[in-house]
Image (cartoon, rainbow over all chains, first blue to last red; front, top):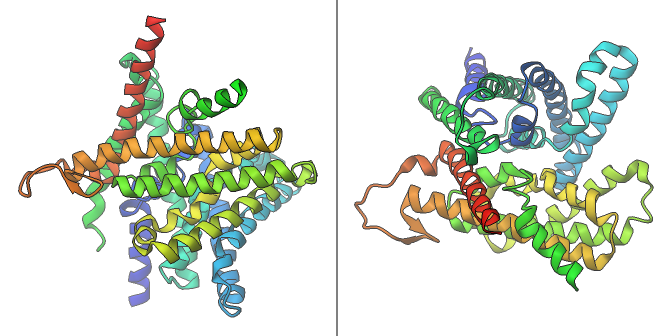
Length: 195
Length: 201
């Protein structure tokens, strides 16, 4: 029971309180880059969920299976980024063989994911927080859900902004940041939920 | 010489990685709560950029183009590990406040972007200038935003108090929303400034 409520806390915290985009500032580039349209935003979101969950699981195993026993924790950064880069490549190859339609919808986002700092960031945070294996995977999956939530909300706002009459210097990017600030302010309302 | 100056100023102003290209925004938003953090992050990133540009400019002919990107990432990750260990050794406080964003320099798309777009296609000398220009441009943007946030959010600058002890500050600028709003305002400000300058010409 205790473990279950612990997991629930991790889930709520990952989606709302410590949302990857609004509270941790991870994955800002894809957040701004692909959130122009709802469907591309969703595609990117699913690709991120996929890679983030697997990368965190593999990263966890490698960290406690290789880095810690051999006392080479300083290799963490190099090892994790290699895992992510090769994982992305692997996912791309597998998807191409297994499901053409899924590949067509996610394919273009996969190369971008290697430099999505949310993936590496979440994998590193899971290690830093001393999560167990199950908690790490749950944390990664629901962080990705938080990312999808953020990117979808923002895509919706942006589609409206296209038609809005924005002061000239604020056109495009600056007004995007201002809207993100207001969204982030709204998300701060969740901060009392989890201690 | 003119060419070198051109490359240098390009990174600093016209193609500023943060305000113009919107690259490497995560650390920009995350660590700019105080000017010292901003400066530390900017210099750490500049160091990594310089190191990776130098190595890649020298080695680009030896790297087969199919494994180009993984090799670049490996070079960058090596320099990030060096910076990480150096900061841990010499400035535990900075290490504490930058936290996870030091290892995350690896995925700063600005660095990979310069490796791919510039260092792998140009000589050593120009690559060094490009790294310094881009790095300082990045640091400059970080410093601008972090001073803006520190002054409004905490009422201090480089930890030196500007207002009295009991004066109230605009706390929201020290929190995440202030980072987004601050950067939005700064980019809008630079846009209108640039337009004014353009009109004069």
